[in-house]
Image: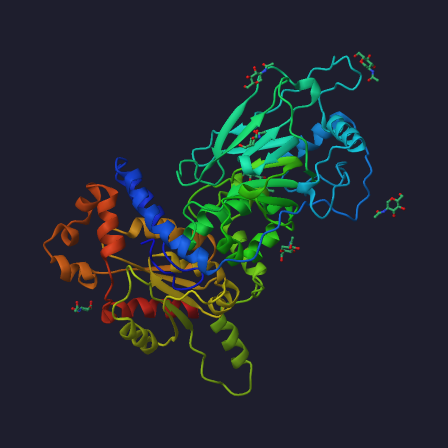
Amino acid sequence: MGTDSPAAPVGGLGAKSTVRAVAQHHQAVVGFLVGFFLVLLLYTTLASQFGSQTAIGVLESRPAVRADQNATITPTSPSKNLAQDEEKEKNPDQAPVNEKNPDQAPVNEKNPDQAPVNDASDRMEEELIREEIDHGGIKNGTNTEPVTPRKPICDLSDPRYDICDISGDARTLGANRTVLYVPPVGELGADSQEWSIRDQSRKYLEYVNKVTVRSLNASQTAPECTSRHTVQALVFAMNGLTSNPWHDFSDVLIPLFITTRALEGEVQFLVSDLQPWFVDKYRLILKNLSRYDIVDFNQDMGVRCYPHVTVGLRGHRDLGIDPTRAPRNYTMLDFRLYVREIYSLPSAGVDIPCKVANSAASSGAIAEQQRKPRLMLINRGRTRKFVNFPEIVAAVQNAGFEVIPIEPRRDLSVEEFSRVVDSCDVLMGAHGAGLTNFFFLRTNAVMLQVVPWGHMEHPSMAFYGGPAREMRLRDVEYSIAAEESTLYDKYGKDNPVISDPESIHKQGWQFGMRYYWIEQDIKLNVTRLAPTLHQVLRMLRE
Ligand SMILES: *[C@@H]1O[C@H](CO)[C@@H](O)[C@H](O)[C@H]1NC(C)=O
Ligand SMILES: *[C@@H]1O[C@H](CO)[C@@H](O)[C@H](O)[C@H]1NC(C)=O
Ligand SMILES: *[C@@H]1O[C@H](CO)[C@@H](O)[C@H](O)[C@H]1NC(C)=O
Ligand SMILES: *[C@@H]1O[C@H](CO)[C@@H](O)[C@H](O)[C@H]1NC(C)=O
Ligand SMILES: *[C@@H]1O[C@H](CO)[C@@H](O)[C@H](O)[C@H]1NC(C)=O
Ligand SMILES: *[C@@H]1O[C@H](CO)[C@@H](O)[C@H](O)[C@H]1NC(C)=O
Ligand SMILES: *[C@@H]1O[C@H](CO)[C@@H](O)[C@H](O)[C@H]1NC(C)=O
């Protein structure tokens, strides 16, 4: 499962989450955490190996203050600021409101963290800023205007994720895993509120450490800013179940897209438990979502001051987006097209490769032979692998495809690999994270998912088939017969593992995990597979 070495840059498998669905499916809640722990062991092993292989250079913690702008303070009315905030909440389509932000205070460009802002003029500026962002109506000292009650900083109501949004004066203390809200002077009360949340998209995922969010009260002094920023910031974790590509996307990249895409790059990422391999692997996506340097939060000794900080990632479902809750009503189709654009793949209007080639050929003078559709056949590394891979390659060729066989390797970059996937009409593989490469397919391309033995149809649809359809790909599932599972030879046809998978699942998710996700390999019956291949060919000709 987790130890699976991906077939490709976005390879691997989605076992962990599958586990979750199965657990829910069978109400096998007990034992769930135990199982997760097992999964963790495998993953951390993999992650650390991977991490050390692909360590990248130092990530600098540079401030995002733009040197090309004038450091002038242009106070706007306090009420206007509130209005802006509210508008931003209602209308996330807008670019972040930060042009007017006055905190362009000169900060030592080269190394702000070693240059505390503490001389008198800076202090004055800080006071001005604080007034500027104060929306409490304290301007004339009488404080007679009713203070609009702030909405709570942290929202713990979603069943999937927790999230905190701090507007005004937000200060991050990365090394302390803390983000502070410093209320305007007029609002400093006796109560100090504190939250502690996991800053990723699964609020119950133990392996993500918590970040503390606290609002100060009148008797607490705010730590002084060592750097000030006009852009907003997002604190999120890169550890957890990442290193399995399915989870890279489901737990981090899609939630990151939901949370920040509408900001058009105007957000700085403060990454807790930063994984250099992740930053390297997905650098194109990360660089597009944020045009600022990534900050290694755990190592950040400074006090960074931002007009707005979000802690956590919004996520809607496994490898999915709920358009009614997403900024700009983003869909999974938008996400796939976005990823393709980032990787400079042909635009949405371009047809699948075999159609493009054949329409060009048929317009030529000579009626050339139709180009065969190209099928990428992914074999998995350790689990659910095709034991008769060469035979399958031959069968796919005989059916009329050009085959690109892909066996597990890690030496290709996502950039290179995405172009190979884009050149294919079909992506075929056993249920698992290798199929996550479907983001690089063109509209109307086909994902052919081989569903292993053991009532795996539900997770197969939930984690790949459903998302594929939402992204306007066509999905075809081939559910193997018992005889095509290596479990059949191992346990015999009368063993419940073969004869009654439901009874295995009912014993607890870890049993299903053990047999169907981990122990099972696949020996495809190419005779039985042939009609499915022909079905795919017909679909491609439509
Ligand atoms: C800063 O402001 C001055 C005076 O308004 C102006 O002449 C100058 O071009 C500005 N500099 C930048 C970098 O905008
Ligand atoms: C200060 O508050 C008083 C009482 O509400 C109001 O009458 C006055 O106009 C305010 N002054 C300013 C400068 O806003
Ligand atoms: C941050 O952590 C350091 C070391 O534990 C501690 O001395 C300091 O008081 C903390 N700062 C805040 C604002 O909690
Ligand atoms: C402010 O909060 C701290 C920590 O919660 C508390 O110990 C202190 O008494 C509070 N101060 C006031 C003035 O209530
Ligand atoms: C992100 O990608 C989009 C689409 O290619 C592009 O228009 C935009 O300028 C990019 N943003 C950044 C910050 O690179
Ligand atoms: C997004 O979806 C909601 C709910 O379906 C709808 O009310 C709203 O008009 C949509 N917004 C846009 C920009 O399409
Ligand atoms: C392979 O599938 C064909 C067609 O379904 C079937 O007749 C044959 O018995 C299968 N072979 C094996 C070894 O199971």
